[in-house]
Amino acid sequence: MKIVGVIPARYGSSRFPGKPLADICGKPMIWWVYQQVSKVPELDEVYVATDDSRIYDLCQQYEIKVLMTGNHKTHIERIHELSTKVLADYYVNVNGDEPLIEVSTIQQIIPVEFHNEPMVFGLLKIIKDPVELVDPTNIKVATNKDLVSIMMSRTPMPTPYKTILFDYRKTVGMECFNKASLDFFVSKEPGYLETIEDISPLRFLENGVPIHYKIVESDSLSVDTPKDLEKVRLIMETRLAKNNMPPPPP
Image (cartoon, rainbow, N blue to C red; front, top):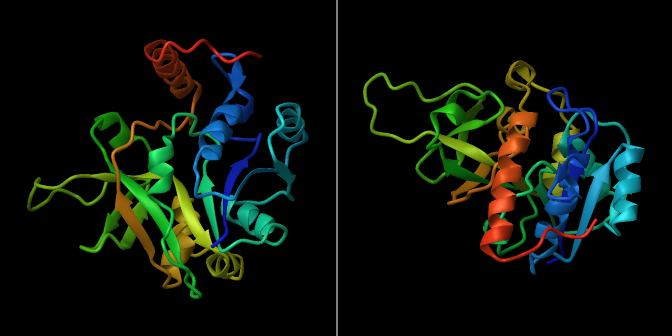
């Protein structure tokens, strides 16, 4: 199987404009994400997919493989465009705001066999910080016993009405799609729930395509706001110091 890593990156985030270019220990955030994804041995190629010339030029500067796409409403549409130009069996999406993502975490989302029908895979982590639970940027997921998705929401769910003996789960910033699932996604209009929640993978659930999850241990932290960036910088500085690694050269 050919498996391609894709890092969608856009400049115009409503909460944090220009965040792919934000500095972390001397390098832009997108550089850190690309370095981690490129270390995954199962990936045959890795691309940044962007519609912004500033991000494109920076990737060229750092010799990062980059593909310029059109202006899309969702990251899945952007990945679909890339899939029409870079042929593969699976496309592993790692969000461009995940500079702390671990190689071992990415490896857990990679399927072991090919599927012809639309297939989508994702990762979940147990929420341990109450701030993450109430933060609407963290997507909460309910699954069945086989870890197949039932519902996704920005609000905490399920509601602890009859019991409190359960864990809340949130998505890790990555997904894996085969070409059939990407084609399926762009063939459908946004549905009722997707329009309300603004969670693009809900388009799969609303049209009967399940998302298959694994639960992982991960210290990754997505950078959604400048406050998140401050925390990530501290974590990165600690990692570099712990491993006796100097900051990367500019």
